[in-house]
Length: 197
Image (cartoon, rainbow, N blue to C red):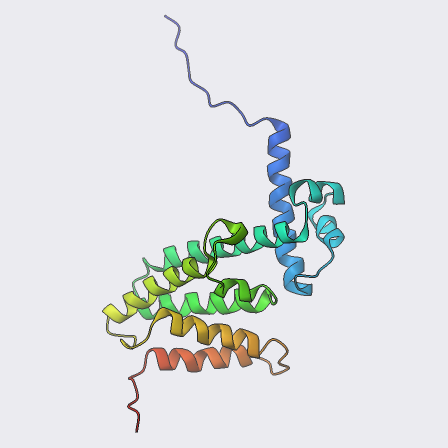
């Protein structure tokens, strides 16, 4: 009796190349948009990805489609980090680390940050604001359950503060200012609420 082994069919070479090209384009776009903003040269993105402009336009027919792919990729990165941090033994450190990552993402993608706050499904197929709010809510609630974060705060409060730092320091010449401002916010997050006089 002949033993037959079941093999998963290999991905066709053409499909593999297309997938890899798309991944290279998104990675290059993240880098170029971070350096030059959402109006960056698409030809430069294609060049850094090691493909021709025609390949870029086959995957992304316009700038909006490419920006959408980069935003989706960025949100997935944040989601994966939040999921990992939810298993961290220190709830405070987990929240702080994720908010630092969120600040970095918001700052290096100037011009796209407003999309994080738009409560609309749009081209991504999901609500960016809601997904990010859910990540922050899980991490903040965990710190609040441990009694290490103020109970009167909401995740939306904290996100608005971090977005405010990103926007207000977009053109700051002071080294380390965004991080210092975030430290002040984190001190408030983990401090006792103040009573109004």
